[in-house]
Length: 440
Length: 176
Image (cartoon, rainbow over all chains, first blue to last red; front, side):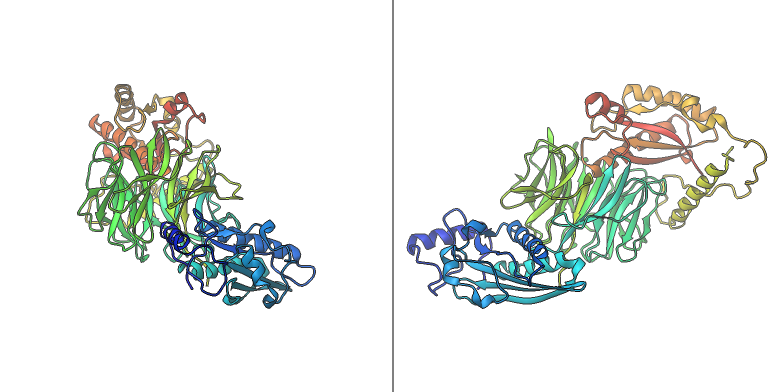
């Protein structure tokens, strides 16, 4: 059974279910797609009790359970049961999922129960992860996730994606991460972190200004701008080797790298022809082909997910706005029309929306449909919110915000508008790019 | 043209020039670059140091030769009247006392605006200054641009008086 995707649709179904079919006790066998806990909350009720372990491994079990709870709650599709909502008869998980008393979980309004059992041995850890339908007691997700101990978070994130994929049809983004520029003025390095802020890692040691990182589509490389060789050049950092190689070293500006969806080419901004123009360049840095030809400022290119179009910023109409062109530079049209100066377009992976920045006193994150219609605000922080980048499931946008002072990473859910800070990132963080999933 | 003969700076300059030269080799495009290329230093130049280096002391510091930064309005790369006046003075120095120098025009922005857009805005400021200097008779072959966007403020403050100082172009000596 798959829960129907989309809040609005779900809410309609829930309302219909309540109108025609008064709350039969959940779990009497005739299950419907959505057994909501009430009007206005169409999320699926899931209980995630602390994973079971052999004696002495409770700390790891608690940590792993917390990570799974964060992952499931982050999706916005799932209502986690609070521990005080658990059945009073529940005494904690045992290694045996068959011992779960499903009627009591149904009474607690759990539609699903997660069962996790962890065995940690030597340097390894194995999670036996299950999702059980409280209505039927049937196991709907079940898998053993073995790992080196140091990678236990990725194990939990992978389990989370399996759960979300069952419930939603799409796996979510729990195994993804960000790259970004971190550090103080004049000393910025390229960093990566998991999407939940864990595993923060500094990649570069350039002792310079390194900014605007962006993952290659396969997640194996990061293109970025650095002044490490005194001039402003573009580089590609290979994550497996830790090596940086030059992508573009033209005189003047080498900026704003953006990968084509197939990874074969990049759009970038150069000033070798004495203006800020967008070029299309092979991934090895060869064959620079100029796409824009306008006296104003053209920058911030961003591919559509089908690779056929490039959104970008231009002030050709008098103020910076979002435009789109095809990959030969033709068929240029303006997308942002609501008035404020607009910057930093990011095309959603499903192709339907473009996130961008609107200047209106402060700088706020907005989203519009890919044809420019239906612009709507995702932030209203009063601080400066910049550099939006979509999650691969096209549900959330990561960006940098100064609403609490120093620049930090925040996410916004494009459907609900919910903003939340990415926890645990100690450095000032700018220019995030949301990378691909790493799960298996 | 005089170059620094001080060991550390020479090493640095050669390293930078070599780096720059690698990039130039791939520049055989149909489109003739309008920006001049940065080339290696004179290969005949001796690196043997005997006594004090033969340094172009005036050229060491553009500021001491009378070169001044120019300033811009918010989100603008238009040259203001005060900038035009400063650039005229700078152009005279570049044509006279610093006639041999390669000039790097550095464009900067205040912290408002997005990081990526400000790199482009800073570049536009540098290109505007370069363009005007060439109109005043300084050869475009001597002027290269770089943008630091909002990454290198002159004043660390977060108010208009700081921002006004940060929206600028600076002029520094580049290596050829």
